Length: 109
Image (cartoon, rainbow, N blue to C red; front, side, top):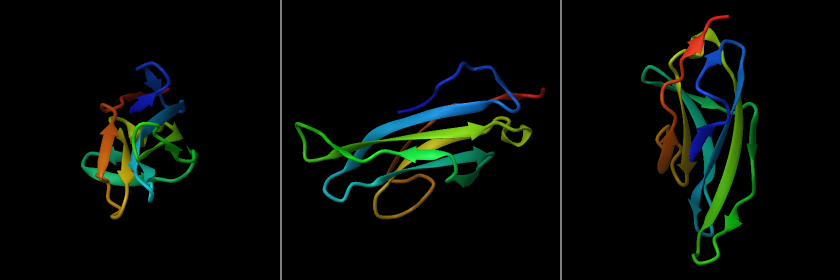
């Protein structure tokens, strides 16, 4: 569900694109919301995010949605992880469901 679109070697200044797609519920389709974690602290990501309209699932009464996020890597993001969450009723860093990357090492230039 959450995948960086580049290889696993990341250098400070790289821009990495993440894609998230998932089931966001029924008639009141939820949102996909991005966070990054430094240690255990969560930070919402709102810049450089493109959200797509919900698409009905053919055999179900639910919808899927896709979101793409671009993140410029800095030294401060060394060993951060990126999380995509499904937000329905309550806005939290865990969301109703979530998927996340492994920790992302960022090499200095």
